[in-house]
Amino acid sequence: MSATVAVSIKTSERLTLLFVSVVCSVILAIIAFGSVYSRYIADDYCVKAALRKADWLTFVVSNYTGWTGTFSALALHGVMPSAQTLVIPIVLWFFVGFVLLYLAVSALLERVIPAAANRGLLSIAVTSLFYAVFMTSLPSLHQALFWYVANAHYLFPLALVPLSAILVFKVQTAWSTVLLFILHFILAGFNSLFMAFQVSLLSLGVLATLRFPKLRVMLFVGLLGALLGTAVVVMAPGNAVRAAQLGMSPDLLAAISNSLAAAVYPVAYAARQAPLGVISAFGLSAIFAYCFSVSLIRKRLHLFAVLVVTFLSVASAFLPSFYAFAKLPAPRGWTTPIWIALLGVMALGYVYGVIFRRDQPPLGYLPLRAQIAVVILTFGFALNGVPIALQAVSRQAAYAAAWDKRDAYLRSLSGSTETVRARSFHGAFNLEDITDDPTYWTNSCIASYYNLNVILPDDQPPFVP
Image (cartoon, rainbow, N blue to C red):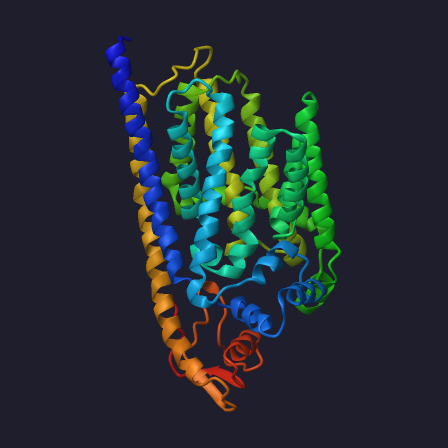
């Protein structure tokens, strides 16, 4: 290949990777913008009403002893901002998650494609692709991202977990090992689904690195942190209170079998929600691996290993829900299983790309045909991703407008001792709001938040965007 042709291909390669980054970033920007329309819903009222009567520490302790052991999520609930400023923490963690994921991807690609000329841009392209496919594959952006209480439970740990990969693959110092312990202790306190997943994955990691003492020690220390965090969650007095109120009757064997049976659901759901996104995640990973990776993977056994690890990780994430409630989690609880499944899809694409190359050395660049394939796959994903993002933002904006109107009305009646009637949002985003039962938990929380005696729905049908 002549020098002139090589320069031309490198230039078009940069443009191709930039195209991937821009398309996926546009989708992410639309979704992030939707956070402007985040407002209180369901549990948010209960949390904010409780915070008016107690300081942060009292709030955390009372909920830990009276409802749930997820101490990290409770700590974030205790700093919930006003309804109109929810956008600040949501966008902040959205951005933090992207940056940490980029740093983790960059550290990983530095090992597997050390000589790539555009590795930095490739890292951005891979990061934005995964983040955008993940966001558009979620069952409900409204429950997972735009709802503060659920966001703190389910998305915050996924924003932080790439830091673990950075400490393991990039830093590898004594201090990083200590930080790894602290990090996984904190991550265990967000939600039981992620808690079970990280214990499972770290355990598999320790077993898989028996020939690498330094790496094994780091993963083992991380596992100890996760186990300690798990113990703090499991021993919370509030768990028994919650189990009694919700009528939980755990069955471990049934939970295990149901979790294993459900392990294929996240990939199937993502493929139905954003099929071209899943195809792009697999296809682009395979193309990048074929052209750039210096990995010596040759055996199809690696494909099987990725499948098994992904399958067991998803099953472990479902296990707490089946154990506690004997059913799949609510839409917000699918964040961790879908996140795991999409990582597995991209890992499968990577392994397949290296195996498909056979014994040929990596090209070190994207040839023209590969660039065309990358552009086509990315454009295809945009056909799925952009409409999903726009529709989510549109629905959230409609909810915010109706919420602001009701909020102003209820604030004007604050302190009333009469029964107040207002438009209900019961069923909006499959969540609960004002019902015909004045003693129902959402009625009580909304009444307390607005300093009302009793609140009931008016004669209008519930507003469901």
